[in-house]
Amino acid sequence: MTTQSPPFIWPLRVYWEDTDAGGVVYHASYVRFLERARTEWLRAAGIEQHKLREEHGVLFVVHGMELRFNRPARLDDQLDVSVRISQVRSASFKVDQRVCRSVDEVVLVDAHVRIACLDAESWKPHPMPEFLFQEIAKP
Image (tube, rainbow, N blue to C red; front, side, top):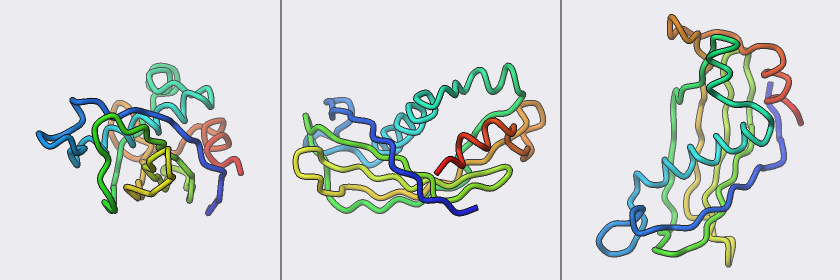
C-alpha cells in the first residue's frame, strides 16, 4: 500500500559531538538523527519499541537505507528531521526522511529507509500486528 502521510517533524540541534574537527556534521551523525526522528515518531503515535518486543514479540530493523547528502550542517545549527510514510506492506514499511536547516528550510539530507518487522525470537520477517499496521498506514 502506497501512502502519502503528512510528515512528522523532530527538531534537534547540532552539538560538538556530531561534528568533525571542522565543525561540520560528520556523515554518520545523520543516521543517528534519522533514527531518533523515527523513534520519536513512533513514540508520538503511542508505540514504544521495547513494548513491541515484550508484549507482541516483534521488533523493527532497518533493512535498507539510501542517503543523499545535499549540503552540510554545522555546529549549533537547529535542524528539523522529518518522517513521512511512503509505503506500507504487511511486514515492512518505507519512510522518506529529510534533514532541513530550520532557519531557511534548506534540505541538507534526503533519505529513503525500508524498515522490516521481524519476529523477536527467530529474526525472520513477521507481519505487523494489526493495530500497528493500522497506525503506520494512517493517511
